[in-house]
Length: 344
Ligand SMILES: N[C@@H](CCC(=O)N[C@@H](CS)C(=O)NCC(=O)O)C(=O)O
Image (tube, rainbow, N blue to C red; front, side):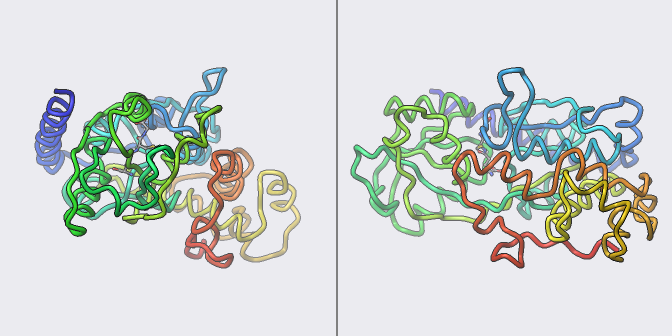
């Protein structure tokens, strides 16, 4: 029953998306930056329960890579990384909430795909985590490869790329499966632990994050070796509001470039004053007027790096503790994929 109901909710959300897409084509493009300034806050949509990406700590403060990606935008626009309201949402709710203007920005383990840009009226400003989809099983099952999952029951969240890849993978390998579709991350994990499904499929980061929350029995769960998709995760905004898009895009690139330039939260202010390196002088706004070109003060990137840190600092703070090595999420000149175009 749950599975039928949640599937129906997914279809209803898709209908809302189609209508919202038509409506937005007729109205003037929103000025999100003006709205953020007037409100004094960025409204950022995040996951409900995603350790490493978005989760409130014991004092109720949100922590995670997605959270920090939003904080950096608040630092760039408002000069204060704390001027932000986090709005947790499910995989099904996230796109209608961004389209309707309830959110300024969505940073929610969300995969950049063609259809999400061309059909949903959204634009992805960059990639804050390179991910891929995996499967987790209980060690006691004895399963060691996804190819052994023929006939299995699989827990999956609706409205996700995960659901689509799962179907493709089983079809192309001539295997069958029964989905158990549950919208809430907490409930789907409980269902998996309780044995309602043989395997749980999600972004590998999310599976690692689930395992990291199992304090006593983490070893009872195994991530299978197959990674069946590309899941480039990143911040999404409404299409058409290009000023805001530029700020989100170049804020993330500034964090990546800062790591490459050896700039971090500890040294940025001193370096900004003393450097004679032309790339860094432009980066910190002593030359080039690049901040002004986005309607921001020229030291916008200094604010971002001082308050939130470079990309590597965000990674160490949030992702290293859930046990995922830098790997493909390293800089391009260190064996990874993160590459910022020139800031000039
Ligand atoms: N990246 C995929 C999957 C997104 C997804 O399922 N995220 C999970 C994994 S972190 C999630 O949101 N869990 C936490 C939650 O629902 O609060 C997509 O964009 O469709």
